[in-house]
Length: 87
Image (cartoon, rainbow, N blue to C red; front, side, top):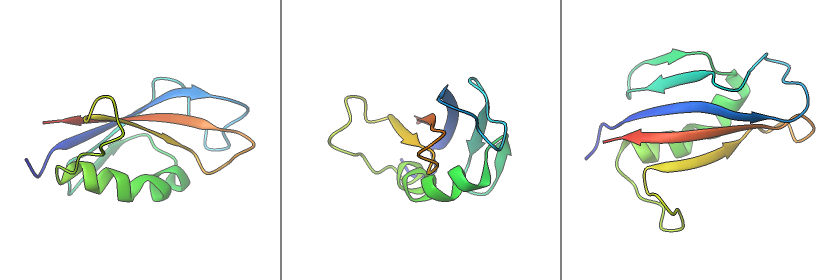
């Protein structure tokens, strides 16, 4: 199962994203490349989760083991991301 592609999609923006992220913006990770639009600060904060999902780790608390959420580290202007594993 290792080597899954991870698709990151902006689901909600509360406030003003300084990086200009908007609902529907997407980025993909294949383990080597990152393609698409993604704020570097949000990316840095989510990489542990992305790499774990990429390697096939399941988080037992998720309703769907292939879908996780991640919040931008800017707590005054929160961007909510969906991380979806494509097996």
